[in-house]
Length: 296
Image (cartoon, helix red, strand yellow):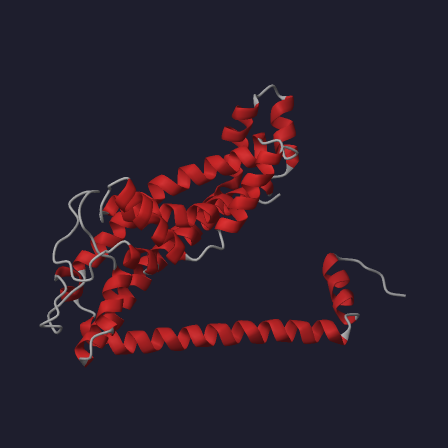
């Protein structure tokens, strides 16, 4: 007769009794992870090796050129991308979080209009980005007469990532234990005080992670900007929200479509810059998650 003296011994006994199917399932999952990481590593190694000759200060200090790729850069694409992502964060994140708070904390889920809202949010999260580009072109750029500007691009991309922000924020708010709310309300706090001081701070790690993932999708989009008429060769940085612009994905697409090998090297270097910006954003999300994460 075996005596369970510690939790570790209980875990060991549980592992000894696992069926062979569970071991096969674990091996399959581990193999899938290794294959995915292997392909990602191969892609990163190839891009870095290809763009290494152009990974210097000229890349982010110079403007793009179709005549002299050896001295061309992607400065306008970097600044355009930062403008778009900054405005998208300002518009999509507060709106998405507040919508999630309403749907989780205030909405009556038995009402037909709340069910309709939830259904539409789930459907919009799966809509292809080119559809949002058509929406931005027809309504924002032409009907509202915003033109092909930074504001048009930011609003279009905000609509693209808004369902993702709402869904991730709802999951983070839902993960907060009900006892937190009940304890706050029992001590005399109002519902809004409970949400603002207890629920939202506890949900920050999940909200931050989901928001960065949404912005990470936005930073790599090219289809909506192609529909909006964003130029691929812009030799100036945006001066405001009503200025013309370009973004790194469009510049990379333009360089790849050229026949000269120098443009392909330049495109690989621009991909590395785009990945560096994406890695920085993800690092911020990881820091926020570790800084505010709580164990329940």
